[in-house]
Amino acid sequence: MKVLKKQANSKDCFVCGTENPYGIHANFYNMEDLSCVALFQFDSKHQSYPERTHGGNITSIIDETIGRAVWCIDENIWGCTIKLNMQYKKPVPYETPLMCVGKIEKLTNITFSGWGEIRTLEGEVLARGDALYMRLSPQQISPNANDYDLIMNQGEESDIQEIDIR
Image (cartoon, rainbow, N blue to C red; front, side, top):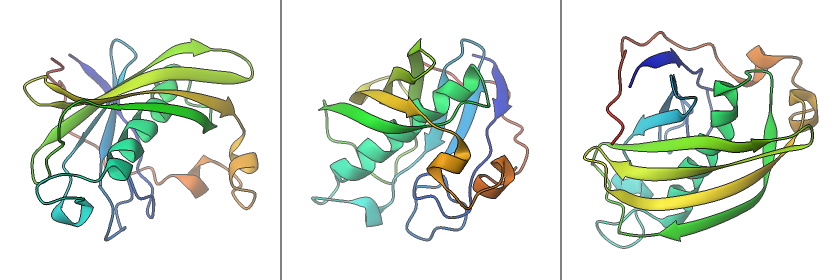
């Protein structure tokens, strides 16, 4: 599927932070079907039991991907999670390239909601979440932020033009 745009990363975010030594370092892409795709891999520092990623880390990437999927519709919409339901279907490995696909199902003036799935690159669904977000301005989320640039780095360009979403 065609990539429309690579989204910006922040510096310190646990999920996308480029300089967070404990982070997942995910990169997010706006897709032509208005879904958001994160490409990433967990590391052994994200483990729970040996060879398994901790459920909190799994939830974090799904939450972030759904929350960013709204930017595929309108880059000026921000929000914070108010409800998140998870289904852990299979153990999620670390040291393995993965993707998370998220899409918005409903958008109102007050909230937005959607779903997200962690998948292997072969398309096997390992975990799924459904979430509801309260729409808030960047200033409501982070009172010291003046605009988008204070929250998110514009980041590097990507030469990824297509992602195989199975």
